[in-house]
Image 1 (cartoon, rainbow, N blue to C red):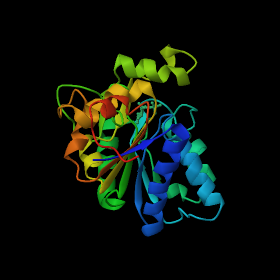
Image 2: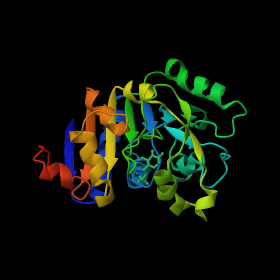
Image 3: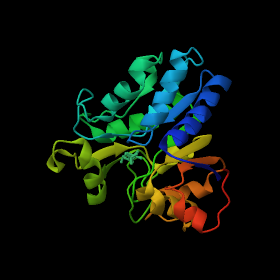
Length: 250
Ligand SMILES: N[C@@H]1[C@@H](O)[C@H](O)[C@@H](COP(=O)(O)O)O[C@@H]1O
């Protein structure tokens, strides 16, 4: 795992955006695996700025997002489809039909999961998968549990995730209790993985991801088995990793 130490959130966002931009530059028809949460917002702004300066085009890019809340319409302002439109898609030249987010309103969620996994065959293998980290080490909405789940699946969100995400809703009661998430299989199938993390409240999850045992109790720990993972994190998020003496690029 290559680890880049950055000074703060903005620095992290610039470094991570440069990696995604290089991928699009090298392979304009690439498949980007995208993530939601507050961590990637800054890097999406950097990508928008690069697009607006004429440095980058997403016209041939396909995107596949990690997850969606079950029960939220794409027009709901807390749905991940809305998040992606608001924070990226509506500001760049990606074709709407080339963007993929699970359908949180699917009448048959199991069929929706099967359809989503089949994107690997139709859209193609993901060139680079962007990931944030949940405070409990979740990736996408793969929550800690007794086993890893390979396939896209419906998941019950843990209380800690519901509490962490309540800040985006009017009240905690409005946070959906379930989500559809890409499984570990699709995530690990990506050619490269880019993980971003910022802030002290991610330090434990970052440490467990990099240094801990590989266990479904810390879903991100399985990234240790991937051949090409880059972690871009700020000093606060890397605190425990640096204290453990792990080598990082400054
Ligand atoms: N499903 C998303 C994850 O993909 C994301 O990594 C996590 C962390 O979000 P934040 O970056 O806001 O801490 O939030 C949600 O649970």
